[in-house]
Structures are given as C-alpha cells and as structure tokens.
Length: 124
Image 1: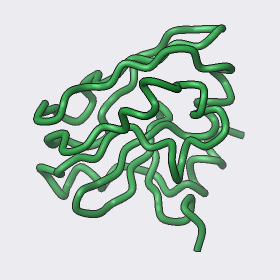
Image 2: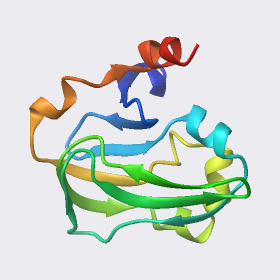
Image 3: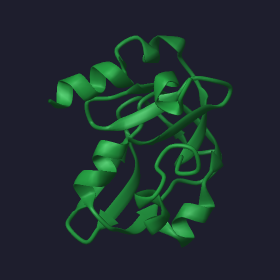
Image 4: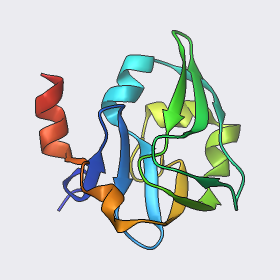
C-alpha cells in the first residue's frame, strides 16, 4: 500500500494521514502547480487551529499561497527541515515532505475529505 492510498485530501489541495498524531501536508498537484518552492512559513508547536484556518504560508517562483488546516487540532510537531530547505518539497511532498503533525480535536473532521483517488478524479 502506497502513501497516497492512505491519505485523505481537501479541495484546497492539503492532505491528511489519519493517526495519532495526524500528518498534514500539501498534495503533489499543489506542489506541481506552485512550481519551484522558495519559502515556507509553518506554525509553532502548541498552536491550535480549527478546520479551514490558515496555518501556513508557502511561496514559489510563480505564486504565494495560504495553506489551510484540513482538521481541527493542536500542532505537536513541525517539519522544520522544510523551513530551511523548502525546495525539497518539489522532490517529495509526501514521505519526508509533510508539514505538521496534529493532535486531532474532532474525528468528524475527516468525514468530508476525499480519498486520493477521488481527489485525482476531481482534478480531471
């Protein structure tokens, strides 16, 4: 089973891997659309967000975008290696390219997320 078989996606191109903690990142489609990533701003450990809140900012040579929290919860880990080398997201946005780990606050938050397969179909 690949990483993408286990994730759930939002219409705004974030993904979440269910677990304790849940892992949140940006989909390969989002990274591809952005192009070469040059800057990433992530939240602090302990910050709390509601589903849909802006929790991070990303900039590429083409655009700047906000990244939205796919589930409500508290940040328990931040991928600080990406802040120092945001361009590494262009090579791997899944396994090593996760953005934050979140202690989920509400199991119902997962109910309206799409499987990766459904997400890819929606993009077509």
